[in-house]
Length: 356
Image (cartoon, rainbow, N blue to C red; front, side, top):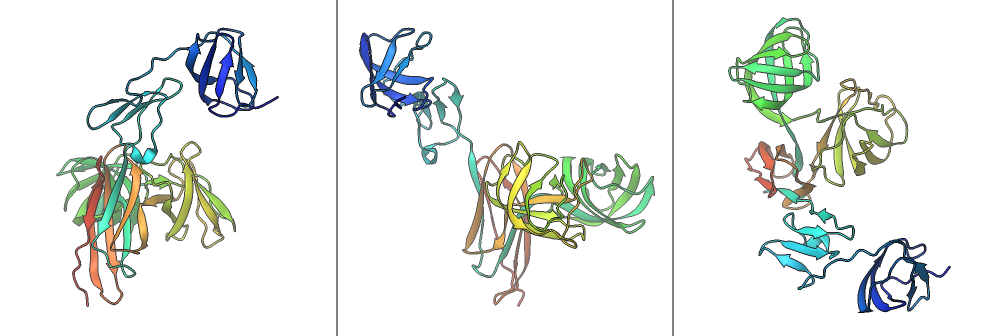
């Protein structure tokens, strides 16, 4: 069987046309053409490629689409509303544009947004951008302890709720890292109640910004000498960069920095280069809250320029934690701040307070 040539002229009894697209040049079952002369082909008519000589039979009735003048479609002044079947290079699209594909389905481009950290010294500054958490000490434990990592907490004075991402339990005192869910960030002397455990305590001292170490949870244990996949309990957030770095909690409690080359939200899997997780560098997985913690390090590197950035697809505002450290020839006090990746991106600038 002769193959069609992409976008060749085609003929049939009663007309000629220009092929605009075909779903398969080898075994075509769908073809898109523009009629140049005559009338549209009908069921069981033979369509022949003028260049290739390939042929196919029409099956059922042709579907006609109205041409647009101008061919591109319409413009609102700030966005393109494309005509049927018009394609535009992704770099030239914005999230406000609308395209109609060859199945007559409306397609809206993703809103790719960028967060930038500036004010850096290349080759000296270590930069971390992570999901935002909150960290504090606690004491006066009561109720039905202990607290349980992964449970929801409620606070009073001020009122709020949070997910317990990290717990250090020293008996009746300890430290917590939380991810705020609702309400206001707790303050010194706020009361804490565990939603699952029933444990109670009081915040002891300042509540400071930190990374949220349990953004994701490890499902499948990492124990081999050549692991290439990190499988999570939950799917990655939409704004996860296409490539980047994750930090994985090892069984020793240390968080290991691991680069990923891609991820699949369907299988909830990060693809990584072959990496050894043999004990003591192993990490335990498990369903629900049993697995070790993982968080996406949106930026996690030694600065290679005066600014560093990451890009993700915007779905909703993401609160971020930013840390910049420099202990090299021009040392600074550790700089920490918060930021937001919004619908137009976001930014933060390091304040360089000398620590010489």
